[in-house]
Length: 135
Image (cartoon, rainbow, N blue to C red; front, side, top):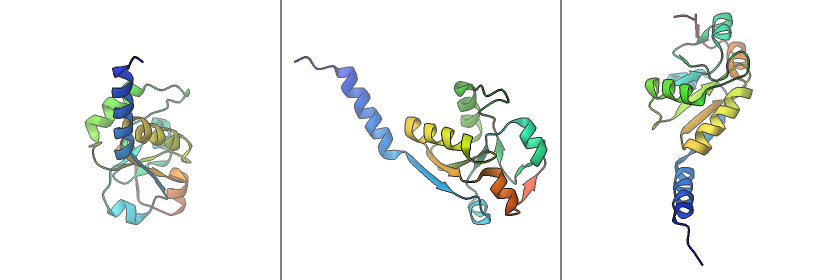
């Protein structure tokens, strides 16, 4: 029986990453905003202009208007603006896109991510503070 060391190392790394990964889902709220956890708005620039962004949110598009995406580009911008060793939240319009991206970031990269349920539609309905884009 031949042991494949690469497979063993990969499996151990995956398991260790999974141990530290955390994904939670919660609705946007003033209480969450008061915690000053970074909130990354992954919508498009057009969406940011249309509604504004949550006060203090960090706009970094994941899915472009045509549905395409560039993971490397997104991660580069994310790492420039957010300490990914600490918890951070993702928001989009309805939580569909943020659910996809937060699952990827937590389960594949081991980040501690909060997916904001209901997205900006929910935040706006609860009259959470917004700021115009561009700032």
